Image (cartoon, rainbow, N blue to C red; front, top):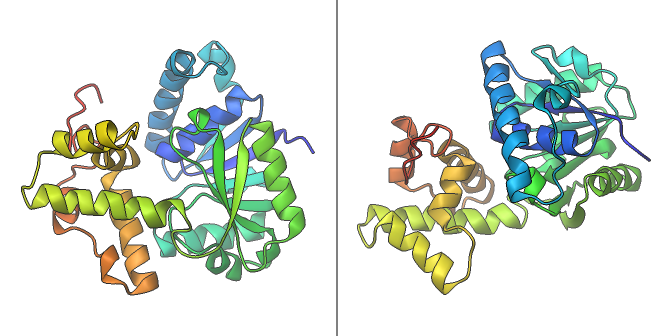
Length: 286
């Protein structure tokens, strides 16, 4: 099947990236967030990505931002996704917030609409359990920025149906992406491992073993990573990393997932990484 209209819930970093990806592939999007201010910020980020993406991504079409914005409906009304063929949810990693969103989506959307849970760590089976359509709930872990990443981690919940999985793969194929389908456990594969890297890097920095630049340089120059763990944490958002670690710790009751105290202190201080202009590194142009 070919998708023409996709709902994107949450206009933060991931929601913006997913929406830009939809625009580049000719899919209409309904982008929902709780405030007009959030949507205006998202609009500005989308325009910036559309302008500069062709410099980073050969597959990105050169578009006038006015034409691109015609493909997007910006709204604070969740009801506006009623007729969307697929939903990609990107709200914050807070179970109580997600729960409210899914209860509403379940009420609003057509019974055959699939919900793609773009979560870092929360169980897909848990999300499905609060809906009347657990067979149509699947994890779709988009990486940031979405339009640059050719592979998506797809998480199959306990009740996720073959039909929902095939629809998800069809959407990802339309976006030019391959799907790696894994089982549903909190953190799945990518974040269960990557957050250990980021958290331990924060501990190393906290303990004064090395500077942030030195830590990341070792990962890039010795291990061949494109980004170091602290740069990656800044890109994701330190608040998101902290919440994800809290979910992992609660889920497994394993001390290896205990959030670094310095990381929590930085979040309390509003040092969230790229989104705030300062994290482990400075981002003066934000």
